[in-house]
Image (tube, rainbow, N blue to C red):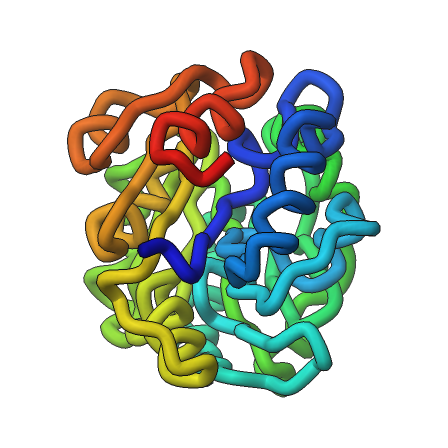
Amino acid sequence: MIKAIFFDIDGTLVSFETHEVIPSAREALKKLKEKGIRLYIATGRAKDGLRVLEGIDFDGYITLNGQYCFASDGTVIYENTIARHDLEILVDELEKNPFPAGFVMRDTKVFNYRDERVDAIHEITHNDNHPAGDVSKVLDEKIYQVMCFIDEAKEKELLSRMHNCTAARWHPLFCDISPLGGTKVKGIDNFLKYHGIDLSETMAFGDGGNDLQMLEHTAVSVAMGNAPENVKEVSTYVTDSCDDDGLVKALAHFGLL
C-alpha cells in the first residue's frame, strides 16, 4: 500500500511549455491527499522556487536535490552545506577560468555573471532570473548548491579537487554541484523516519538525471515520457509526458485514482 509519494517539479508536475502545474496533476494531488496519502516535493529548486506550487498541500519539501529539507510547518528536517574549502577551490577557479555559476543559499541565488546559457535555462524553468553580483562573500554564507555552466569534462575535473562534493545534471548546459551526503534519497529517508513510513510504502515520479537515485530507491518509481532513456531504464513504470497527463495516467495504472 502506497502511503507516501515524492514528486519532482520541472517536467513532472510543472510543464516546460506553460511553466505551471498541469491542471490534471493539481486535481490528482488533491484526490491523493483526500485518500490520506502523504505528498512530498523532491526538487533541485531552492525554497524561493516553490511559488509555482501555491495552493497545493504538501507534507514536506526536499529542495536543492536534498540539501535543504523542511516539513509543511517549516520544521527543518535536514540540511547540508558545501564546505568552505571546496567553495574556495571553486571561487578561485572562477577567477582564473570564469564560467557562469549560481551560488544557492536557502532563500535565494546569486550568479558571478550571466550569459546566454543562463538565460536559456531560465527560459525553460522560469526560475533562474537571479541577478549577478559579487560572489566573494559566498565564502561566509551557507551555500547548499552551485549551478555550474560547464561541460561534463570540466565537471569531472572540478570534482577531482572538490573532494567533499558531488554533481547532478538534468540539462547538458550545466550541472548542480552539491555537498556529499545530501541527496533526494537522503531527504526521502529523513521524511520517512519523521512521519513513520516504511520504504516499501513509497512511490516517486521524476524525469531528470537528478532523479535517478530517487527512482531507484523508492518501492515504486515512475519516469515521465519526457525523461531520458537512462531514467526510464531504472524506473518501475514509464508513463506519458508531463504535458500529456502522464502523472494522472500512472496513478490510474497503479490504482491510486
